[in-house]
Image (cartoon, rainbow, N blue to C red):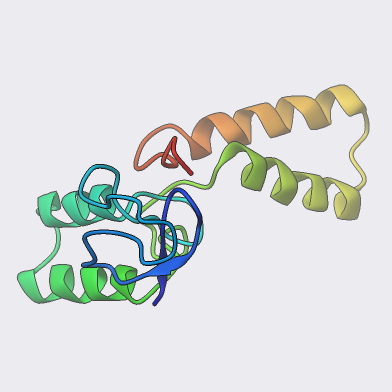
Length: 124
């Protein structure tokens, strides 16, 4: 069971109507991916893309339901925390000149990462 309940984060089937662990109604707020993205929003995004053939859409939806990372598939942006962690790791290895330039770089990266696409589920 690759997707998770937004309440207890227990594993659930992508097509489940409720969580077997906590009883959460998944018809109200649907399951989330391991990255906290709403599975229904991701499916809607994929279905609405005109640059993909129908077979590619079905393939992407199946991958999401199997637990693939939507960020790695290019369907969703990383969260602010994920972007900041990635930048701080890069900053340590590249040794920036000043803290101010590091903060500017982090701010612009987070802004660009969150500029569009799918956001994290607020219930996650």
